[in-house]
Image (cartoon, rainbow, N blue to C red; front, side, top):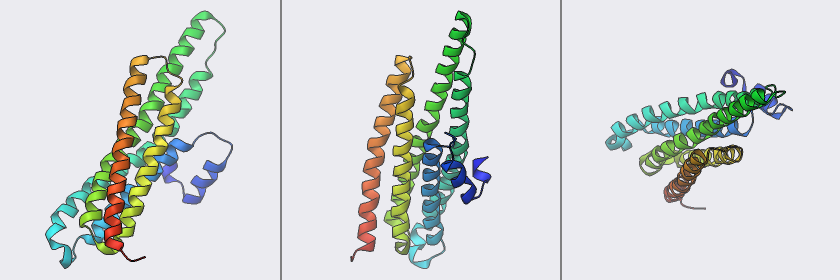
Length: 210
């Protein structure tokens, strides 16, 4: 599993000539890092007298964000697995008409799965960003910059995943699936961009100065 590698090992594999892991896994990793940072701000708020009035909320947000982080971490490997399944489908025999039909069907099915994974990354990043906004507005002010970085990582993860959704949709013939998925990723992107701006405004208020 990619998540069991050291950072150096993961980066070496990422930089290799192998097409996977690639951008999809990196997008999920960026989202997981953003969710982890959000949980960190919660944990740096919990137990502080100054933030006693939001402690219960921070505990709940930390738990929910940790769940999302773990889901994004799983999607790092799922994205690579989905890509490999697509490649396996393309390698199927195509000597006869029956084999060609079976190969085409396998490619289409695998590509749908490879589209659903980054779309799920986008959805989870959106959910996590709602929590990031909460910690940016109510969490430990000394960690405001961490909340800002969390938002930017989640935004990057979402935007990166959107690119993978788009490139996979280009290879699909199911018009209904394409239309639905296209509308979903566009809606999520708009929400994520808005949430990120809100987080950064809250961060600016906390940081102030230069």
